[in-house]
Image (spheres, rainbow, N blue to C red):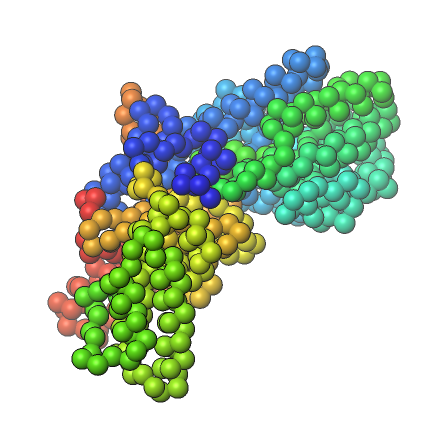
Length: 602
């Protein structure tokens, strides 16, 4: 990784580095640390989720403008439409701005559960499309009918013949107007990337060719063919290659044409699902196509099939959520401790007579020069291994071991300061031996569940000190009581951070592209709730912090997991003196994250 943390690879110019600070590349270009300071001045401590609605708006504009440019280039007769899949991020601080800035394009929502459907029915702009995916029961289908009755442009995507039968039942029982109907087709074509299994013949969702024909016949028998408006497919999230998409487009395009020729006169749309990739890597580009290439391939391929089959060119729908939401949220968390802090020289307590290897370590530290730095550092690590063996055998005592650890660490720090400029590459040979442990005030399970669950990569960098070369190979520890709460140092994708004195300054890390899935997949492991979140908006050249949502209080977290909080308070109050209980009550109304005693930036 370069000293700019790969920002030119993953940030899409949303963030820049200037004057040693990470800044938002928009309007007055404020630094992230200035926003953090403003939030902390309002007494919100712990990790922060910063949401940037202007980035969401940029992504929506880019999606529509790119597809519409391809439509003009190929003289395509259909229109481009899109919906945001709520499963990617359902939280109101994200959804409300998304709906507002998408209004100009008639941008809609996709729901995959009853709760998500209620969100769409309540907040989606009337006339903007709603698509409903996933397995459904009769109650959910009835909700779709109610949404249609409200005036929504809603399409039920059928995952199985039983769902079509339930549509017919609800239609006959309620006499309400039938929503649009879509058929999700199970293609032979699969996707590429981590989530490729969501497409292909063995995927969880969709109708086979035989079931498609049966569904069409069932619709004919019940006089609802005129409600069939869409076919839908999805071959995987975050596709890293466009080649499988081309194959899927041809397959779905032929199915569309066959249904048109069978008599589905109102079938006017192909929904290509999601799949647009987001660049998460800070080391090399993993997405092998641009959005423009993606759009051109979609428009060209479907136009070509429509021409071959002699049918009208369909409207194109997409359901890309990661592309819209990921980049608009940044997690910022303070480093609480460097675990080498106990190895400072003021803890050194040499004896009058020290074991020879201890004396040699002291001589290495005292006599080191830039010329000998790499050699002496290597020697110190070897000496430390030998001293640990001697300790295990009982030949040196605990004080000797402590002195050995302190001297070895000080030798490494001194060597790094010498080698930082001229011999930086030499350090990489010893990265696993000299890595620093950074304790960060956040929960990996709450804020980065995809890292813990599926090894998803996220860009990470400090938001200050970016004019200084980072020299410490870093492992990150979260504050949960779980050994899995760690982002270990990885030689293939190394993270380097700065050697800072936390008694003199704060050091914040930014975790980027965390706006897709992480919020709602996050878990209350150790009962840590969501970080404090804030929408960062720009008005008249100034930064305005809107909709600050504080991390949950401890007492509220306990209520969420079904404790009787009144009972908890009564039991504690009954067992404590009144003045002591008042102290306890203050803590019950704080969040679970750790509080720093002193802050350089406040």
